[in-house]
Figure 1 (cartoon, rainbow over the protein chains, first blue to last red):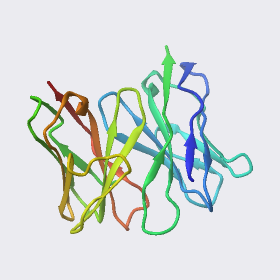
Figure 2 (figure 1 turned 180 degrees about the horizontal axis):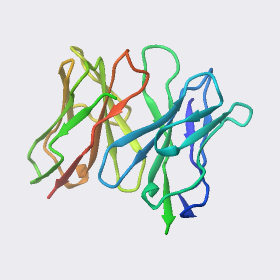
Figure 3 (figure 1 turned 120 degrees about the horizontal axis):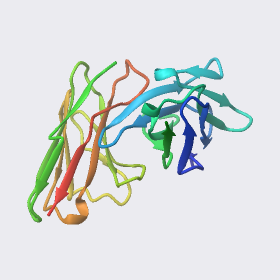
Figure 4 (figure 1 turned 90 degrees about the vertical axis):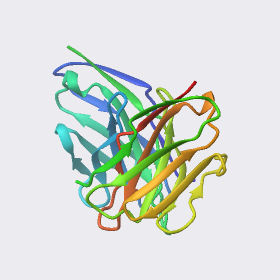
Length: 115
Length: 115
């Protein structure tokens, strides 16, 4: 069965410091991996995805993520956090094969950036 | 990127009434739409997958007679919560996908409160 784990419920970081939000996955075959961000009472906004190619993926708002096949991880990173980055972050993996395009979401990590 | 809208953004209803939520893809044709439910500070739970012109596929544990989904056109899917009860209060989010894009586009969500 495919699954995604986000081991941290909350990550606290000071503004200007680098941030990492962790994600590990378990899939059969090659994974399609995604990061989304959700602001309060809003839908999800796409940040970035890994399908194939370079392991380092660059996305919106200065975020990037590194695909690590040996560690089955896809951690989200940003060199310098902003207070406005404070939000709920979801890692997701897409169902593999067949007609399914279902996304399997992690439990979410609340990022709190202190000024 | 593609835009998905939801209407209404917020609805309050009395217990026992039915509520319809619309999900529209504004600038693309959505071959498949998804309906999610999100509890406070929790991850998204996929409720059902709907393909245009066919019956929705519900996830295990989701009552299809309770949550009626209609995908009448390539740009519109509706979720009707029938005989709503307070435990149905939640944040409902739809998403849409098209073969042209390799990702889901999410609507802004609908906050349902059942009194």
